[in-house]
Length: 80
Image 1: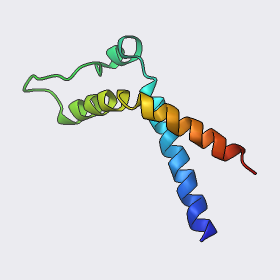
Image 2: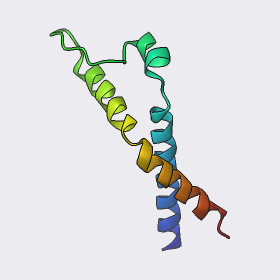
Image 3: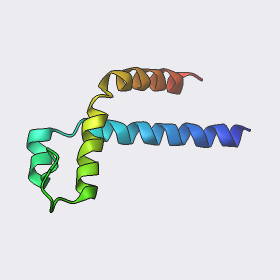
Image 4: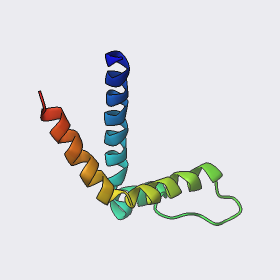
């Protein structure tokens, strides 16, 4: 039982770190360089690129819950 919880905890922390990494990407400075700053509606646009742009935009709305989850994770990590 402990092995399963430990694995789930590590997966949760890895997902939280990945979400934090996507959240801090700056739209004008970083994403524009790779043309990931806005959805391309042209017929020749890649569906995968549009999905990545949509995911980045959706994760940007998670800033409030991420602050709470990061705080709780830090508190739990400090417990003995």
